[in-house]
Image 1 (cartoon, rainbow, N blue to C red):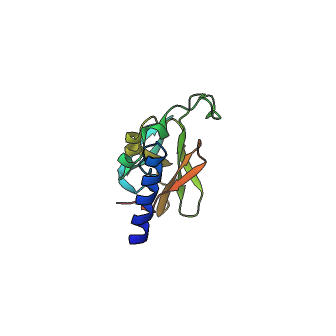
Image 2 (cartoon, rainbow, N blue to C red):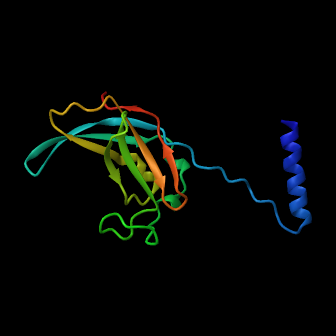
Image 3 (cartoon, helix red, strand yellow):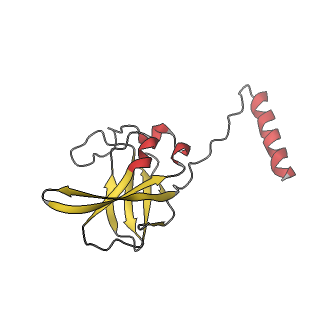
Length: 148
């Protein structure tokens, strides 16, 4: 540990001697910590569904820039201003269940969901994968229950 601290001090000293100020080390965002909020029934187009609602416990650890509109990146369907980071739900076998491509704030990670037609047995476990399309970095969550 002393060797690491010494290296940091030497690096900061060299940077200051060169006329620059040492930059604070930026840490990469953590993997999302997903948990089930609850289930809610709803009807759409005459069919009954169950919505499985989730939150990301550590959503405040993600910078807002990750959710800014990214018109310079490929669109999401007809949405040319899709967000920089897309979020997809998967079951434990890796099958995609649903996705979000227009979240505009880390706070939106508190209202993620996927839905299944009523009577469909949900997967036992799900996870989300956040893809930062600008840096081509993926952040995979823990496995979370789909039942209370």
